[in-house]
Amino acid sequence: MKISTKGRYALRVLMDVALHDNGDYISLKDISTRQDITIKYLEQIVSSLSKSGYLISMRGNNGGYRLAMDPKDCNIGEMLRAIEGNLNPVECVAGDTGIGCPLSNSCTTLPFWKGLDEVVNNYINSYTLQDLIDQN
Image (cartoon, rainbow, N blue to C red; front, side, top):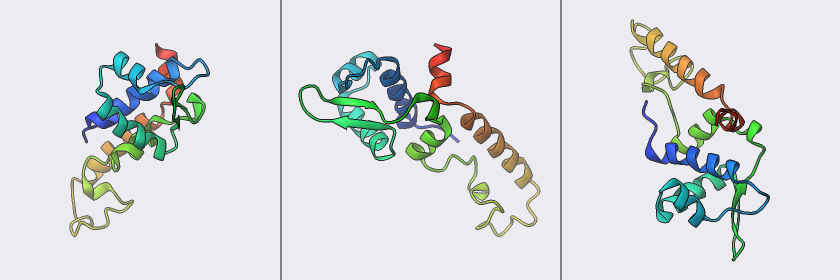
């Protein structure tokens, strides 16, 4: 499992918006400047975050982005899966029983991969955006 640049930047964008929330919408230009991410790439990221329900957008001179939820309700694991899709370390653990792999009934390494999947998901699911804010 490797988190893509899009996933890492999505988390940075959410953090930036949360840390600079003063009640106004935050412009892409401001986020771009602080995070050193091009506006063109930010447009893709905020579009995904908006469609996934993490950001609210407003057009116009005073437009920009705001969090769509309280940071304590923004689960990092859920957000990463919304942006990245499946975060399983190997495809054979994507289902509860390893469905799709003809060797799942006799695979001697499947328990290892299921354990790794569980550890990773438990870790990323244990954090909210508020937890990350509190660490800063």
